[in-house]
Length: 170
Image (tube, rainbow, N blue to C red):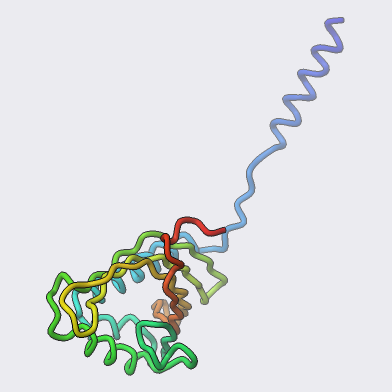
């Protein structure tokens, strides 16, 4: 009776010793993810601070924007310079607290020198022609590319989240 028990324990130890968690994370992606998270947070902070030149510096030269913050870009992507100019005009003259962007959640995916980040952000934007601001959750998909060790944004596609918030609609 004792031999089968010892044999079973011995086989159990052999099996446990052969088990290990394999890490198939592409080389460098954890470090890249940190750099990209910093870039995404800078994007939100620079937008909130209305620092348009710093926001522009986060994008590659031919970057594009598509989304409801720039009405003509809903059906066709526009160059990022045009989008930032429209956004700057929209918030110009409004109280500093009437425009704010806060990142609530990000989902990151990287393949080599290309990365995608789904961003859920809460934006407070001034109401056109009225005092005050409206607060709403937004979903943006940022596509980023690394060239020469530098990550920059290639494109942003955005949409306002469904009413009721952006609480995990999976």
